Length: 295
Image 1 (cartoon, rainbow, N blue to C red):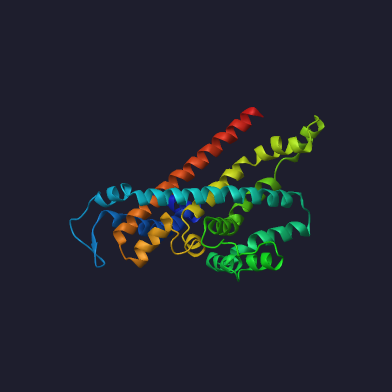
Image 2 (image 1 turned 60 degrees about the vertical axis):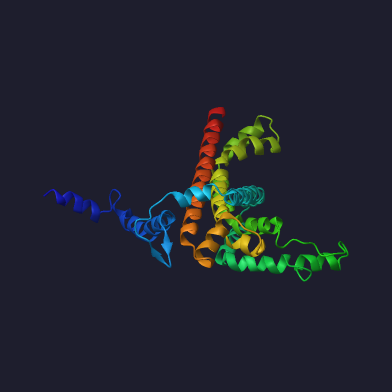
């Protein structure tokens, strides 16, 4: 008799039961592989086999004492932070234009935003190699033909190339949260601000922008996470000598086949990424509460 209510809840999709298949899938195909990878950083692996009774924190301590790891972490953070700010500066006008547009123009803007996601990030990175490449690159060919420069600019294999690639590839992840919030904002607040004598500029910065704070920080957290852990763009656009923490994880695991070192670096990468994202979200929540209290 006691199992009858539970069976009815399962059949009628009540409680958490509808989510159980998805949670089981994530546990088996995401959580377990991730935990296995992280565990590799605390054991000795010799020729693809785990050596028995070698559990130690020594590999993690050695990595944290390595100056190279801290330099790579700083570069990863710097690239992710700058690209996140750049995507915000480029995404906000697009999202605002979408919110103000009507009819077919909204559809065209949405298609333009979503269509890059239909192409692999690897393909788009190679496209930037063609655009930013040496003398034969599209940018240098155009500038040389117009007589604006005498020598080709060195853009590829620099920080600028990585930032350009990161910003363009991750731009939709910033635009989409802003689209949802700006398109559905309460326009009566803007009308009230204008009726009280505020200018269009003042209304935008004091009414519209504060209303979009949750979307801004959601986009910042998302773009920062994918930028901080991205290894394709730094590897292709930064060149062979350009390295970040994510690139080192790839090289140690796939190229060098040092799974222990790669797992330790992956542990550092994921834990620091998680901490940074939590800090962004916490600051965004506090700022949103402050705006609500000040309103």
